[in-house]
Image (cartoon, rainbow, N blue to C red; front, side, top):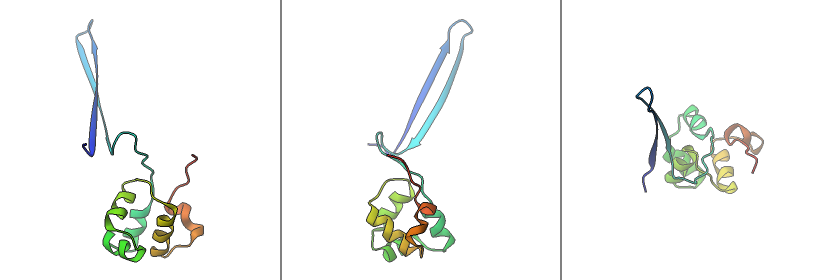
Length: 101
């Protein structure tokens, strides 16, 4: 399945002969929950690469990449990332926004 999908909405107005269209694009698969977070922002402020953050957090670089793209992760992984960034658990909302379920 493609990682990036685009949808075209086409509207045709027969009386005026006008065709208007809107391109709606988004990254990710249909049905995935993408959640905004600030992991990349904090990582870059600390001049840290994805590989370095992954090593300090004890997760794979692919996991860091997925999280920075907005994919969800386990609570334990969030905790590891917070500690690797030198943050306390009390600062979790600065990095991972809270979303009502």
